[in-house]
Length: 540
Image (cartoon, rainbow, N blue to C red; front, side, top):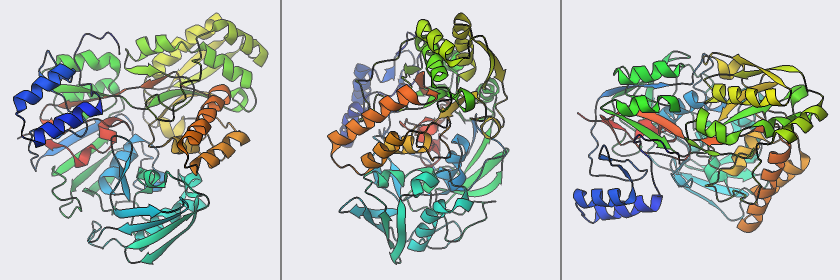
């Protein structure tokens, strides 16, 4: 943690929250609960605010009604209601509102049953899914197994342009075995299948759906309006299959790409909830009465992407030079104001049970950077590097990297692009650019999407046959020790060879009015792992 002097919501260890939940259930008084929170550091002492830890049902009664306006930093005319094509945060939030999935990922990254009543297997390759009864789509049509079969298999069709086609290639066969039952046969065993089915891309749509000008799902909200790059309006689904939820009448959701404007919109009362607060703005939010700054520790990271003639395929020495130029501690302190943990050029966060702690931390080493730069043939060159406020902290990171590069004989010309349209127009489309990657529920999914040779989102173009083979083997390995070893080996490979530099893991910072209740953190990212809509309510 940093030495910041202001108070923020900082969720603590889950076991503390679990004990508090037990106390509340036994009838322990709110005063005693507050004393426990103070003792554990879960209350910001200056404000006396009860911190909202994930999974803690404090003595608050959810209230129905009310409308909120939510502004996020991401968003463009490429926004889509097609779960298969979802390309970023703005899409995923909407998909969680309008659609449901077979499973839901809890705060311990464990899949829980959602539309599925049960998912069972004997060998990890053949899975039986039984669906809940009496679930209806927004137009009244009952959910049946044919809807799930269609929703899963469409990802394999090249014409769908699914972002998870590489993952869906695992589906050898998906077939209905009854009105509310189906079988999923995989090419090879995958113990992570239930978790994968809880991700937004695998949202369930109606059988045969090809029109996504609106969203007909089984989610907690119905789509009243959707204008890509402008806004969406969601209204409560009174027939939602989760009893009692959701609480709000309406959510207006849109993008304000400029972070300063987004913060101003919150503090002026124009919006109720925002994400992506820059650490530089944190003191402004904490100083304003009636608002909460909420920090979540996640596996989110901003990366420097090296591709084409500067990438791992054609110039691995340049890749190493850039990685040695990353002053990670300076980036953590200056670019992120301490809101994050040092990264090591591989995407598995330290809280993961598969994190390889034995991988030596790559140091900031200008001598090694200069050696590899000269070997790469790029010394003395002037190279453009593309950054944007859309990629959290990337402008500051680029400036810090630029100073390091100057010391070893490389001139980096920072090209700052507008946040609007950055992901569709610039992300991974230049030899040097910055990107953001949101956390994923499994290591397998992270590696499959961003590191596997044939993945469309393998941003640096890195190809490693041994890595791909290990990834396939680890997917079906039920021995945890062996699986951990495989994932450890893959972290080493990514660290040493992939054209992606990961200087740090960034904590998510949201801000909201104190009238918004029910808010908590999730390790998969801000806005409660993008699933806030179902859980929050407005205080009268």
